[in-house]
Length: 370
Image (cartoon, rainbow, N blue to C red):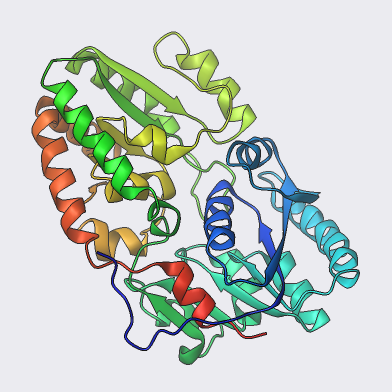
C-alpha cells in the first residue's frame, strides 16, 4: 500500500522541463520522474560526459544530450570543468524555452537557471555533500527530500524552511516503486533456492574516489584484500566487485580479477542486487536499494555520517553500520555464518517499513509551479 496525502490533487502542467543529470543515481530518479510526469509536459535531459554515466543512461534507455564533462578528482580540474560546462549549458538553455529545471544539486544547472530566470527545483538526500549544496541549494525555488532528513540540514545552506518539501519515502523508492513487488518476489524465489544450497553471492560496491566529501584512504578499497579473504574463508561465495570509474575498474580487475567478478560496465543495480545474499556498500545508493529490497547489507562509509542511514536504515535494522576495518570484517564474518536467516529477517523488515511509503514523484509534481 502506498501512503497518500489527503490534500493531494492531480495537477495539469504544460511546458518543457529541463532535467540535468550528473550521476547514475540522478539518471534513475529522472527516468522515474519522466515516466510519471503530468500529461502535457515535455522533457529534455542533459548529462555530462564520463564513462559510467554514458553507459548507464544507455542501459536504462534514457535519452540525453551530453554537455560538458566530468572534472575528475582534483579540485582545479573540477572547477575548470564546471566553469566550462556552465557556459555551454547557458548557451543551450538560452536557445530553449524552459519553464522549469530540475536537478539533484547540479551547481551548473542551478546557476544557469537562476541567471536566466528559470525556476530551479532540487531533489536530494545528501546534505553531507557540502560543496555542491553551498553552490546549488540556495538558488532552488524548492528542495525535495526524504522525511527522515531534518529541514535544518538544508536551511543551513540558505533555504527557508517552507522551501523544503519532505516526502514519506527514501530516494531510491522513486525508481523502485513500480518494480518493488516483482523484485521482492525474486527475493523470495532466491530464498527458496538458498534452501537447496545453491551457490550464494556477495556484492561489494566500491567507494566514491573523487567525491569532495570523501576522506582519501578510508574507503572499501583500502580493506578490500582483508574483506575478500574473509568472504573466501566463510564459504564458497561468488563475489561481485562493482567499481564506479574506468580507472577504478582497471585497478579492481588487476588486483582482484582472479578472485572476484568485475563487471565490464555500469550495472543496473536493483535487478542485480535482488539476486544477492549480502551487499557491502562503500557508498549510499546501492546500499539503500539493498535495504529497501530486504537484502542483508553493511554500510561502510567512515568519512561522514549519512542522514538517511543514521535516521532510518540503522535504527530500523534495515542496514548494518561499520565504521572501521575491524568492525566491517567482524560484521561480514558474523552475517555470513547465518546468511539464510539474515535474508529472511531483512526481507520481513523491509516489507514492514516500506508499507506506508508514498511516491516521491507525486509530491514533486504537486509542488512545482510554472
